[in-house]
Length: 363
Image 1 (cartoon, rainbow, N blue to C red):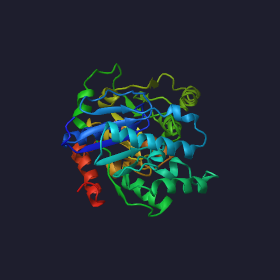
Image 2 (cartoon, rainbow, N blue to C red):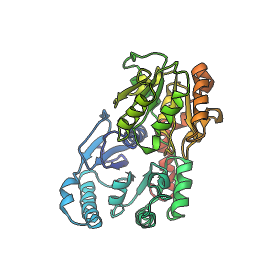
Image 3 (cartoon, rainbow, N blue to C red):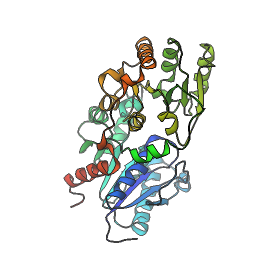
């Protein structure tokens, strides 16, 4: 390893599924393009992505530490092992980026410098602060974690929500997720889908994505284009039942998880998102990188920062969403929007370094 290079370390629980995991790998590529020696440390061996040979990968298994009683005690002990592993196997990183709550909790106990948390979600909605009877206790615990290090939020909406939820407890900034347009365009040419003239939705079947709203709105259109659903998740069987109930079995296609969704996105007439919340809405930016039109609910964080107003729809409004779908089915190009080149990985990595410099991390 070249000892003269600056070191960037990205830490995450695993590299299985999920948008945050993809962001970590893409951001790592951005730091590599800037000449950094890039390391990715995870706590589970699972991997569902092709790994670039330009980055260095490490696994320090958390599983043996599960035998230690007490969550807080367990995380403190494991954090000492993490610090020791980093010092012995990676060196002294110039910047350490912590991703998702499991990792954030562990690194809140780290003694290493230069740590920044990346907040990938709209926290108040993800953790249901308004509906959770234990909300105050949960918020207190999260404040203890997030006061320890500065935070980068993946959208302006996510940053506003973070401050509204916890107050000005630590330095924050908003930096959008990186989008490797060149890689996405290359992956999009891997195959041509067997379907034609279709609508695509990409996302896990979970609360935030509101597949139920999507299906009910689609049922109100003439279904002249089939609706393809890419993803897995806990609500999938429930949505399958709804499709049958509405008599849409021949129009809605469940494609399951696909490790390369980009050919489906590229060849779609348009992409739709009906979420109640997003952190950044990675799938919108990826669709724009492929020139695919997008319509989306104007949910907190993300969509309004990526799309013009004409492409946005009110959350949960089935009739309005159905009308926007009808318009897009008649004229998809009406909802075409340009890709923002400032989202390229090296440009985003530079923004992290600018934030770190303001914090006196990387003089």
